Image (cartoon, rainbow, N blue to C red; front, side, top):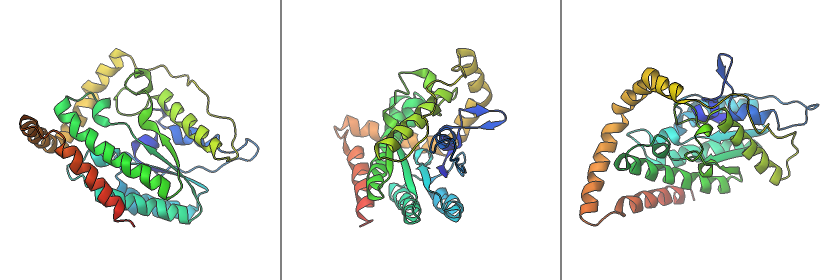
Length: 270
């Protein structure tokens, strides 16, 4: 069972008229061929941690999964109303109920979207801080609920362009294969019986410059405009406040505040 947002939905790995993605690739390798496996993907583009708890979790619990992938948090950082405490509580509730139902949990920390999109530093810095806070929470909750955790954030997304799709935010087909192999490797280390690992190289070529430019002209501009009405005003305000703080020598204040907020959210769980 896969819960999450567009990353887990499979955006960036097209097959026919839909998406495949790392979760579907991994599902095929979770059991020997003669055993077979049932796979359901509840992930949807744009989902927040609260959407998993309110919408995807009830459907997942009804199917009583043996393995449940819960990968979310990137969209939370891209919203003006980002609240690390709310994200923590919602994610803890989702992991807790799935674990109580007997599911083996799969979680992951995520790369910083500002770095992937190559935003200017004044705008990228607040997003990076939010992503660090979310990843801190995911690390702690993965330990709390005994999840099999994969450090997706450490993969060489920026250094190896072929791992990213044309939008520079989602994995390419090769990137999805890399994630699937990573989870397969992690599951093997905890002694779970598995089938063969996903193949190393997909057949699809990486996007070229012309494809990059076409995506930006037809879809990328709309994405920027959509975020401009929600995220961008808040980011501009944060960037301005940080600029003043730097002039006054208080460069670390915002990082410390976010780190304390993440710690307080985790402490509130008991």
